[in-house]
Length: 147
Image 1 (cartoon, rainbow, N blue to C red):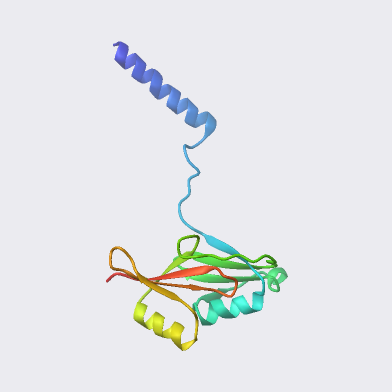
Image 2: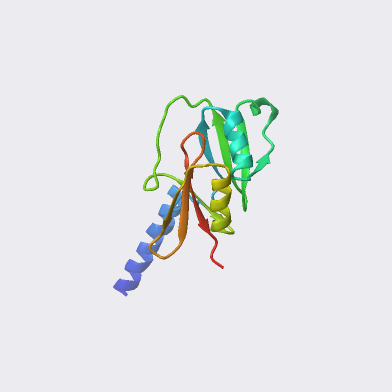
């Protein structure tokens, strides 16, 4: 009987805490967008369209001169924000943006054709990865979708 009373008391405390203080986590359900601060909005917009091949998303009229938004797929977006005025360098062991591609060899050929500097490596599990920067130094990692 004592165990049942303790269990009921514990359950009541948990229920009360949730009712008073809300849920037990932030409740994140999925990724929305990544915002990147860029120096030259036109140059970065061109890179994201022509090199990454991302589809533009309409930006509100009052933000068109200082923003570019792109669809990355499945409701995920990259937002470019004009006005960055500091330099930084990313490397493959630090912050980077990882994307899936359908054919890593085709992606490498595309980068070579455009004379874009990149680093290629084979990950511990045999997956080929390619890293390359955008005009602002944000580093992208490409991985082939496993079939």
